[in-house]
Image (cartoon, rainbow, N blue to C red; front, side, top):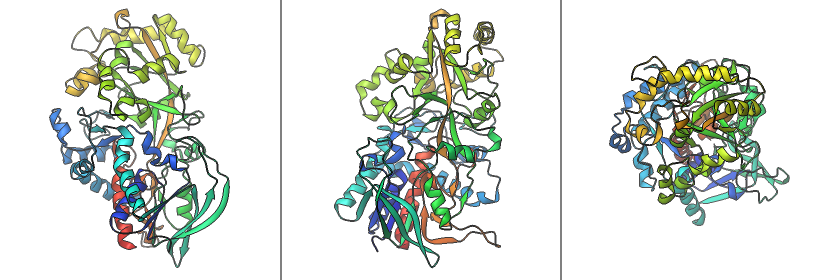
Length: 553
């Protein structure tokens, strides 16, 4: 054998699995089709948010959370309703125990630290037992995605120096080797060397073909978000017709190839129609990869309009119900929508997802971070206002509408129609009462200290020139996460398609982790995500699969 354990994919889940297996004394080979400079995969580009329950950070911010409340929120969001949700349900319960238990202390022991203000992401659909987070749970890692990766990169490289881990970049797995019903290794195409910068497309020219053998193989190859044709082919009818135009929230190498390859080896892919795409995507004015999209992490104050200028109904407010909003917008006949807001709102409420869009947090630069509270939009947001193709900034409503019709389809937005929408909303600001659900939410959410301090602007009139200039932002659908994947048991073992018994059997030697496994079990999040759960799912499932693969080797 070439190793005890082979890990396919050098992203977060793969690195966690490799580190855990090597800690157990096993010899591990990690293979990845990308060059060495892309070590860490998609997680490198993330904001580094992690879902924690009843944490010290929450308690210091006055947030009362519990395992029971988190379980209620998870069940209301996941909406498990299929026979194949057996293992995802069990993974969800185990993950919630992890998030409310040792997750924080395990990471803290490796040096991971968190920003003191806990974010309130995915605020929900307005029902106590429905989708969404009842309380803030989004713990932003000091160092963003690279900060989450750092301890696992360090552990793997230390093992590599000691001879327990071998890193084989530019090795693209084309087949899982199966003998006697067991997975015994991988067949790889060796791709030509590439100096392509991290995230950019690398060559697919093969120079050789090799077989690597091991007692266990862990598939940690990520999802399908970079393959828009595959996204469209798996798009569920419940979300309407797939968009003809989308921006890419992940690099092209997130292509989903290993799902088909594992399926060919007998593994079962479940819940492939469950996916997580955002509706607040911007075309990056300074792209890293082709069609590079950046997500706005919005506060709740912007007025959300469809492409023709109609205001979205409750509960489709910024940051509330991602897939509900996506479903609504797919019924409008257009691939984009609009935020309309003011300078005061953008200064306090706009953040951009991604490590490269938050240099202060990523670089752990306190001085740069303090600039966020000195007035004006954050530097990366200001750059989009000045250079982004989706932004319109104007001193008057007439000029704003002219810009919106220039950036969007001509003639769809009328000044009179938009003025009517905004004036009706502004009348609700004049007293503490009112029936506008969004304004009511704003006032309620500002009772949370974190929102009042740095996240939610004081309610004000959008058409009052003192709050300007006016801003409109065209929003595109942005591909991101695969919520279904390879079905696994609670040891991370891949399962076969069920026979007459209705129960799939573990495939000897084959494990899966991370997005390739739907972050655990084939889809532990069900139909919806609560945010902060993607990286956490990679950590949890990678740890389990690495330890189980080591024990089986």
